[in-house]
Length: 501
Ligand code: FAD
Image (tube, rainbow, N blue to C red; front, top):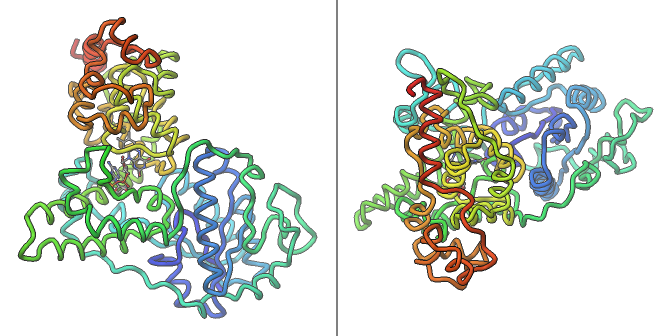
């Protein structure tokens, strides 16, 4: 028997570690998810809600296959050796997580299992091409995306890993017998007298959000699990992907895949996604299709590569979570005005596209990519606030928060990252709104105070007089800062940091 430890891979399909364990395990595989208090200490209502939904979907998937998911709570360094001992498991298997914190945790688990005399094995699963495998000709990690992409796209990719059949999994009743019924509760509790702390391990029973110390978020979070991910991928690849290149920047259109949270929690495997995009590419390249179709599929594949690019940036530079990737000669003197930052969080800056984005985030725990870039630019280059403030807020509120992508996105916007936007490129939030939401559909959807106005008026909001604004939308705020002034201040701030003033 082998124990498979699920973490950010909440699926049975295309799961490299699970497939390896299933192929080999004599006596079947026992899957386990551990609610780790050290990880929960850094989590948020949104993320734990989304995680619980994903774990529930995984549990149901195992149940459909005649098995079940063991759900434990505690420190994996204690729980896993204990479980391996109680179940007489030969080995504990998992898939790697590349962030610095996760790697520290895994090192601790490895040591604990070694000390307990239990074999263990870690697989690469979350990416098509592992962080160390794509390097410059001099052997260094890439810091420029376009070169990385070239090598990424030229490489052979693995096919999806096989899904284990029901006979490779330990039966649900055998599991229940082995673990004992416990009291079904995963609230923090003391160890039982048995070999395993049964009051903290249950067969298929999930803890309630409140038992884990979190509250139901206000945001309406989308569906979780492999089936929902496949539905979304299938719908996207049947049509929208062929127009992705031209449409992806327009937040009012449903032009992107919305797979980010599924990929973050590993509810769909990246090999499965990529293989499906290759089929779409073959369709796009058929004779009677316009060239944009194939270009659009390639553009979509480029986004999957951005995810892997930032994964390898974080892997090689774990410190970027809190530090600028790019060193400036002097520290950047961020402004950090709490009232302005609070208005940004509330979506009350008086810049309609910024406010629409921040309100979409609150309502859906999601924000469109173009708008993420706009609000991040606004925070760092109009409010002159430290990107870490924005990163922390996104980390708390996004259902798809992913350390590598979120950090990469913020450092790009703040001009402190690898391939960052040059510091002197500062988005004008009014022009961005006009260009990417010309009819103000997205703005009106998220900012009800502006619903009755013509798009033209919305895009001129910063130029209206106080009386005009009061007549047009009395509830909606005037711009909290003057973009032109702040633009100059931002340029000066960066120049000082670069030693150019
Ligand atoms: P699609 O356009 O359909 O892209 C497909 C997939 O490619 C995404 O699901 C995602 O996994 C990946 N991807 C797309 N764009 C990027 C990108 N720029 N960088 C890395 N991967 C990308 N993405 C996250 O997954 N988690 C985050 O926490 C996150 N934070 C961000 C913060 C900022 C400030 C910015 C500018 C971007 C951030 N992104 C993040 C990247 C991007 O905005 C989201 O991945 C995308 O909006 C998700 O929507 P989608 O699945 O419809 O994307």
